[in-house]
Image (tube, rainbow, N blue to C red; front, side, top):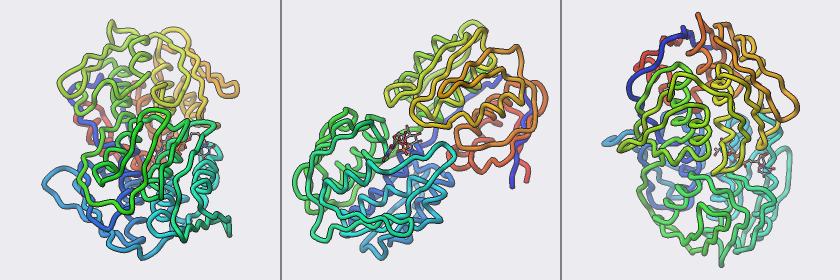
Length: 421
Ligand code: UD1
């Protein structure tokens, strides 16, 4: 298993180009199942999760080919659905595999998708996906750890209200509703930019969708959807992560392909913490405003609130800030696995339930640590970049799931980082 060796202490400097968003690419690939015509996506990032998703749709009958001409241009074509299943071995590795449920059911009338089961960041149920599909007329059974869904006479439009916003459930139902009879309204929908990106692709495929990006989305079903081409939204989590890498090392980076407003509430929180963010033509420049970082409290919230996917990185930043910071996680239980690892590097953190009190220290110290999930792992990378001496990060396959060419991008801006087998 690969490890990363990082020698900290070098302020980063230079330009980083942000890749296409993983969390946009995955639902967009699933959406290609809705039509028998080709879908062309541009900016598909080279990531383990994307490879898993491509493998899944290939099993279902999609030909997926990198066509060149532009970075990450992929052509997806599913003339017929040869299978209607997402097997356990794929769903277990990547929860977003459940996003094929809506498209398969809507186009093929049935689907069998493994239940994701527990994962490292809490139980993460899919009840909202299933209840929504039931409202649209699907019959759903749970058999041998699988969701068996049927709608032999097609889905019908419905009014669906979520008690709390779910990104995945909003996406699954939005896709299913495109091929349902009549109009579907999703009330309490998630508002993440990746949902807007999915709506953009679906609309270029001919779907009628209003309100994506707000908490009420209306979808008028169609008999069929056609082919389309779409360029994927930049990865706001990657952009935020590199911004924090600049700040934690006391360096300065130019982040390209990342509109500043995509950062949502993280933008204000970074500024409050003493980070300067200056808009540029196609991104922003980031560094410390006056040399010191200040402790700032943060609570994770659905978009446009502070992203849970940036919580671990922000905590790493706060470990070296002046004063204290209270970091509260409200989206997922058990998303503090980075805490003991950061503490191995000298961070002072106390956890009480869903809140972590971080007391800033002068300097972190390199240590052997272990990556536990995607965002936790990258928080250890940030800490290591700022720490004195060498940090060895084990189990870095988590990083390969979500950060395209991480060590190349960081190496190019001065980080001393090396991958060793
Ligand atoms: C997506 C993102 C993930 C991000 C998360 C929250 C993708 C591929 N992944 O995950 O990176 O951390 O949004 O921004 O886009 N819930 C239920 N029942 C459901 C569905 C969700 O109770 O049926 C709960 C979850 O346990 C969680 C909350 O709702 O507490 C939000 O989860 P959700 O927005 O669905 O996250 P994902 O779509 O899985």
